[in-house]
Amino acid sequence: MLILMDLKTPKKQVEKIKEKITGKKCTPHEIPGASKLAIGITGPTETLNEEEFLLMDYVEEVLRVTKQYKLVSREMKPDNTVITIGNEKIGPEQLTIIAGPCSLESRDQIFDIAGELKEMGIRFLRAGAYKPRTSPYSFQGLKEKGLEYLSEVKKELGMLIVTEAKDTQTLPLISEVADIIQIGARNMQNFSLLEQVGNLPNAVLLKRGLAATVEDLLMSAEYILSQGNYNVILCERGIRTFETSTRNTLDLNAVPVIKKNSHLPVFVDPSHGIGMWDKVPPMALAAVACGADGLIIEVHYHPEQALSDGFQSLTPSNFKKLLSKLEQLAPIVNKEMNLNEHANQI
Ligand code: PEP
Ligand code: MN
Image (cartoon, rainbow, N blue to C red; front, side, top):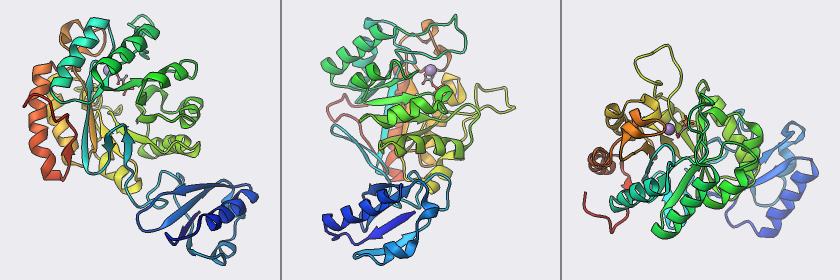
């Protein structure tokens, strides 16, 4: 249920309404909006009666949210969410680029690539310290050592860090370093992990599961928002289909579908989506053309030596070429690339 009120509603009255909601064993969520003050209600809302709220001062409308997911839905919050991280904004007016290697492999590797990406203007660095791999014999990441290197990079180069949380045990460590905590495809329905990130202040990049529908993804995001963390980015990264000529099938249909149904920013990961480095650039451009608010792209100095996902990783020089195409495309879709101004000209 959603209560819409006059923007000028006094704080006291807002509190009164919230108390009424908690008194009915439901949870109120204050939702910021440009034209109305809104309180979303989750919990056993079938026990609530619209009339009793409509009779309260400053309440203008009471609506039932028909979607299964509530806080994530555009019904609950018509305005697009803008996530602020440091000086960065992630939202409908920006095209945010996250780049870096799949796995953090060594201190030198991460400093070299981060330095190069920073020169290109990249502000968000990705690198996995904990890697959930299909095979238990594959490289599992440098784990705590990797997090140490990431926090050094963050301090020395001032880059914002995107790294994956694989389980609830290591989540507290990751939350100390990560500006954006990535929840990977394999964990999209790890509900304990979702609830725990929901209680953290960090932004979250929630990737779509290998065989998850758009609705499944939105329901998973609801777990995070329902705990109070509204800084969630949804990420399309390809799904399993009968097609075998590519690693996954990048479902770009999901982008406009999600944007219609949810106010959250939507990113695309073309690297995992197609799984072949030479086809990453066209899919990255296609993702922006269909409305993505950001991209997460794997970049490695020596893809042939990478300990994970080398085949889909761009070299820095190929990534640079893609960046210049993205710079041309961004204004056409009314977006600004949030690259560092002091970067070397592309
Ligand atoms: C990754 O980003 O390296 C990764 C493992 O992604 P996904 O969870 O989408 O497979
Ligand atoms: Mn990867």
